Length: 64
Image (cartoon, rainbow, N blue to C red; front, side):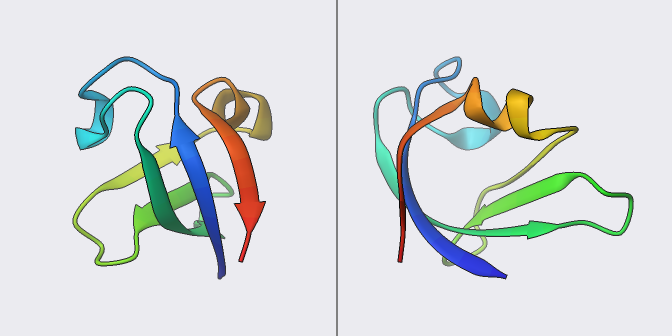
């Protein structure tokens, strides 16, 4: 698991995230190969089927 900081640019409220808000996230690959992200406190979790889908929803990604 890796920790990143990223800005959500997807649809406001999707997976509980707010448009243009920055989050500290944990990023990992799930058992089925999807990219799984969650807030540090695990309150919001979202899975993406591939890296392109992830990048379409997140910006300003910084590795911690």
